[in-house]
Length: 443
Image (cartoon, rainbow, N blue to C red; front, side, top):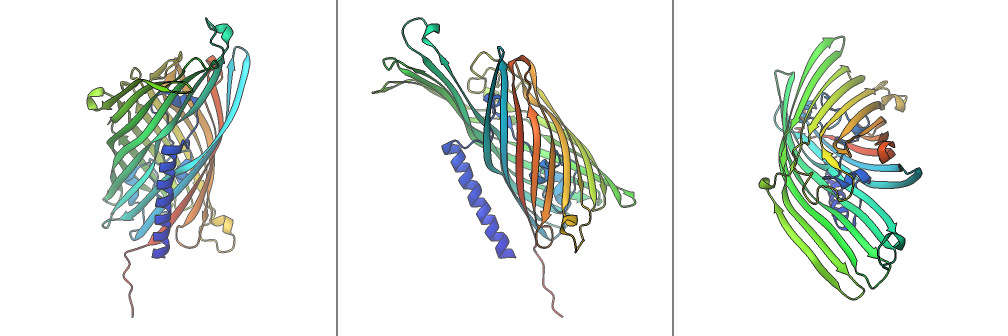
């Protein structure tokens, strides 16, 4: 079994590294949304397929069958000899709609990418450790329009305008947790952010005698921060238990490199008009917002679990509103604000020990969420809401399984010329479990 786990670990690592390299070099979108043009794009929904199929909850969740990366304090809810790993994939299908001057604009897009890879193992008695990688934010958009020669002074012919962006910020994290007095668990996590974002603005003339303008920004960003969590579990009798949890992620100072460029192209030559490279450090004042979350869950033994979470993240004063490369070029106004999220989830297992009916051993989940973004669009709140469904299919022995989740949701609205996104997202997680550090005994 050890060799099988090791082979799966190496295979997942290879697939993840290949995916990251491909997405950075070949434009594989982690997400695709016109709202990702601002700042560092759309923040990725936190958690593995296990969390996401329950509406994204996890702050107060304590399960020995899954790795819960939402709260590092949950690491101690495990078998003392167990090694655990989680490898997740995500796929999303979105329909976009916008009403402008009575015209209905409709388009669609699909994305697919690796979502997470995490391993966890015990350290000493009531303590545990985890390390993993998952996306933090994604940029993916593409706009195009034509300005006819009737709207332009002179005889330039039609002009094609196009904007597109791509890239991701990833978070590499390592955390640990320890339990005190059997009920209180404290956890801490170190997070390292890294990634590259590209935002491009092009203008092409139909008349070849005019030069095509290519402008854009490349942001190579990095930063590090910490996240802290706690959970307290209180037995209530009759196999019931109540767990309260809290998390706090520190504000992050962003470092890296911001390249602003402009090229003028003809059929024979390319002129560099501007190629400014600025190195970002703490003095530039670019930051990622901090985040605080609280949650409560009620658990009925190993049969069912219900949980509610609330999170708040403050992105005001992050320095992105007026900084080139982070602020959006165009007539729309984006303003950083405080984001909020309310999540609820429920899980039930009919009979984990049923030896006759396989479906009774499966874990079934449902959830719901309501989120507001960390920015305002022309003063309007960009919200998203949806419902989630999921199931974990047991595989072989112990806690190995395959988790499948689906998210039906909507972002934005048709008010004030905004874009409404309706999406169906799928997530698949491979939960790997094995018992290590055992000493065989012989009579």
